[in-house]
Image (cartoon, rainbow, N blue to C red):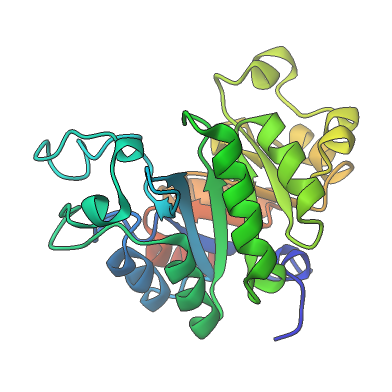
Length: 260
């Protein structure tokens, strides 16, 4: 497929929004693992959302939290930034699953033509190393321009990524506790222009008809998260969002695809 990621993300008239598995299909598989991503695909999702950070040895891994505590059920409390890749990979993050590399997930996505929304975590110590690592990896991976979508809560990360990777769409993430949401509940056009983003990525509770109109005038794609209620998914589809991210991608796909 030769289409750019951005053209794939834009919602076509008369079509339902795309659905991505939030950290994969985490309702039934360990989050951010190959098992969760593959289950999401089998449930019919158009792709997956995942989180990336660094290990001590510099590799980019797929993991939401700074430490392994939650995903190992309290069995391993170490911070991954203090671990080598080999050490991090020895941890069981659920049902025998191991922490994947971002490069491995991109290879899987290319094989199956799955979209990948990469959230670059900002709660890291080696911030510059992480951003540069993501840029270096995506600059050389052949699937990045046609299947990868970047996002972050940190506007500095978004700014750096959008300028270094102009062929990979960037989205600004924000939620109800974000200063920008508290101040105005929507992203200003000047802010988007400065960041160089093509998309906004609000928490679903922020999505209203008025805000959708404002976002639509300033960005090419509106994606929203984390939507696990079928009725809310149908509301968001009717409001015109392009992408819905869910822990239950199969159920949400079925809900928005069914006739009203």
